[in-house]
Image (cartoon, rainbow, N blue to C red; front, side, top):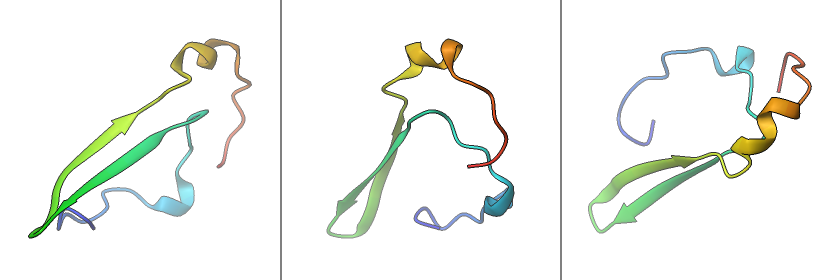
Length: 53
């Protein structure tokens, strides 16, 4: 709850992408911003779709 928002999903049932990076940018007053990237997005088309994380 880095942004003081509740999780809208059950993390135990989450399915993850091939790779992802979530960044928390911390300033003197706490979290200033959140960023998300999928650096291997071009590989997703060849990935096997298996359930679970």
